[in-house]
Structure formats: C-alpha cells, structure tokens
Amino acid sequence: MAPSVCIFGDSVAKGIAFDAVKEKYLLLKNRFSNLIGARDGIQIKNYSHFGCTIKQGKVSIEKHLAELSHYDAVILEYGGNDCDLSWEQVAADPKGTHLPKTPITEFSETYRQLVSEIKESGGTPVLMTLPPIYAPRYFSWISRNLDAQAILDYLGDVEFIYRWHEMYNLAICRIALEQHLSLIDISSAFLQKGNYQDLLCADGIHPNEKGHQLIADEIDQQLNMFNSHRFHPSQLAFA
Image 1 (cartoon, one colour):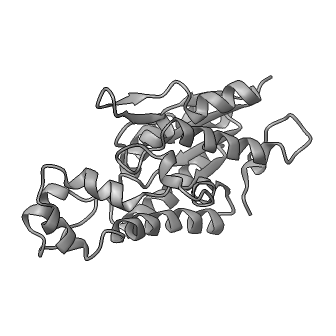
Image 2 (cartoon, one colour):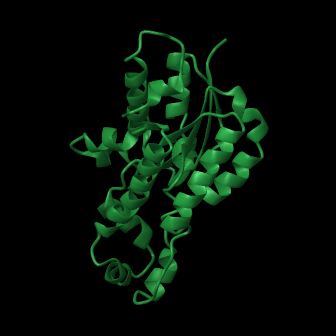
C-alpha cells in the first residue's frame, strides 16, 4: 500500500501563488504537494485553505480527527496569516496599538493544543516552517493604495516585517523541539539561496512555481537519505 499524508495549512501549503499577468491568486498545478506525490508515490490529501490561521485550522482539523490515524503523517503549516496585521488600520492610526490576527502566545498555545489533539487521535503530526518573507516587496504589496509612510512610521523600518514573521517561525521550531516532532524546514532551504526573493511571488510572501519546486526538492532530499522506499515521518526530521 502506498504511504499517505494529509496536509493542513494556509495558502502556502495549498499551493496558491499570485499570477502577475492575470493579476490574481491561482492554484499552482506544479505545487509541492503534487510534485512529491508524483515523484515519491505518496498519496496526499490537502485540506489547506487560503488565508487560514491556526485557530481556523484547529476547527478544520477537529472535523477530521477520526481519520487522522489512517495517515502516515499529518503535516501542519500555519503562521503566515496569524502574524498578519490589519494594514488599513495601521495606516489610519500609526501611533496606535495593533494586534495580529493571532498574538504569538495564543498562536503557540493553540499549536500545542492542536498537536496534542492529533496525537490523541492516533495521528502523527509533522510541522513545517514558513518560507521567509522578502520584506521590501511585501511592504510594497501591503501598502499599495494606503499611506505607505504611515505604515513605515508604525514599523520603524521595513525589515521589521521580516523579524515579526520570523518570530512566529521560531515558535514553530520551538514547539517541534519541545514535542519531539519531525520538522520540515523549508525556511533554511530558501535562505540558503543567494536571491531567495526570486522564489517568491510579487507579494513577497507566497512561493512561486520555482519556490514550490525548491520545497519539493528539499523534502525529496530528506527522503533520499534513506534507502527504504517506505515513508516514515522520521524521514522528514531535520534535527
């Protein structure tokens, strides 16, 4: 029987990318889940959704708890939307206090609860890190049609966006370490590239087709470290 995996996450895990020609978000045919499914013979069920936060993901996963033990791994990819702010509100009140969709403490606590629920259901959770934001491009994206200077006044500097996003990424790594979970570290794969921004869309945050190719290659590299063709979650561990 072919190994099987289910994926819960946001638009990155779903395979959504921005098409600059059509000027809209589209589902990539050559998304990483399709690529590794075709290469490695892994059956993949993708429950990811565009714009999904960890809280929304928890609701979605709880609807499928009864089936999670049937998969060899349950891959989780959250954080990119959780750390996001309402940039319209920031532009309107740059001196105010603004909270992300999911504050970092709540994000970490909810992620831990989710991991526990998956384990209790008989599933094997595997966490995935986030692709790094390219701050200059992302700033231009979020500030279009808004007061860019007001947003910059709130941030202090453009690279604050990268650091804020990375704080959530580090929380994911910390949870994987605490819970002794396998971790798919796509962040390092991007950062090892000299111009990782070439692997991101015009919005500076979603991987483009080349980015999804990199993610698939990184997963394949870990699988190929083992001589067995049988998938096991430990083959995705980056310890």
